[in-house]
Image (cartoon, rainbow over all chains, first blue to last red; front, side):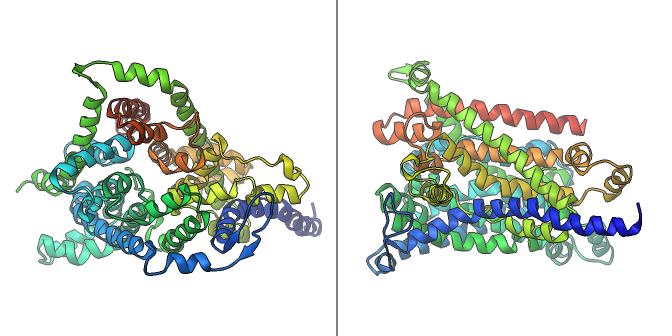
Length: 279
Length: 273
């Protein structure tokens, strides 16, 4: 084959290959953004019922109702963010020492310990939450922020510990040894060398825990409701009552941090850390 | 202090939280499953099988089908990101696929409940394209809705893990196979996927157990019979305060997920051996 025909074929080939490529990418874009667009329509729809293709009236009257001082969206938003931040603090305070030990120190039964943190993800947690609610009720934790944070932290620990372990294993141990050999104590070497290098991975695990807490419905439903109002609970009760406008506005409030974090997560979660998750 | 002891001390607080706030209540629910009036027995299980046999099968089928689809789509996305030859298409896909990843399940339920409904955007588009007439439009809010919701939400997470693992594979073997004339599909199946099998398995197992635990999606998309065990458990407690049958159903789903955890355990043991 001459160079001329090759270049012609390549030219044609590139043009033709864009047909299936564009079709598949377009379909994927519709599958991903179609439902999101539908949600946005619902947040500004005043009236919309079958068989009308689009809402009959648009407006922001529901928004003013949701954000009015008497509406409970602001209260739920504050509670949700407070619980998520506290959950991150509790989970990371537990996961940083645990992840360091699992990555660096020779632990007996290491893979069993790693697996133990998977337990809250590995078992259907609904009956567990029911029994926790019974237990918390006896010791006065039911319906408190502390109770909800504890429940969320248990669930977030798998992300926190597994990603922290992967992040610490991705740091070259020789750097820490070098710091030790020029006279740094073990805590100093950890604080000044290992911790900063593992920081992107730890930030990623904080993000996962934060979103896991924001996402959490079942535990909040049994332990928090009705005393602690959270956004997912508001969404659920509005949707169950057939008020799709309020449900969609609440869903949009939950979407914003999720999508914001999605856009920056790869900055924190690098391939060298990702490939070590679960090892 | 020996390194082992120090390590155990560092792990201990996190483990204690798991034990006190998960394993103890879990044990309570297992014991509760056998508690019947005036003692212990298997009454709750007999009742569970009579009332919820169909739902148990339904749950296993839905979650297995979703896991299978999640695996296939994640490999396809990760594979194209790794082996795709058109940089622009790879960049578009990389930007596109991750959007649903962090969207909370409860929001996924709400979004897809409106999207797949009778007057949702999906039916409107099918009507607009002339595929169906307005009177033929049906809601997808049954088992299909649950599978779509699970796959929509979980594929980006598994694909992110898989693509990350694929990116750290030695490019040399891929280039060598390419030079010998292997097709990209063959390279994906025979060279790339086997090397990321552990990561793929971890992602799929996390997805499987997550789906077994999600209450909001079945409640919001399909709460009528047959539905998933999580919805049944919530119903037993909210409607009857029946902790016995609820705990028995919990134990049934626990046995199902233990089967999956066993596969992971056996795989890692074999790898370490």
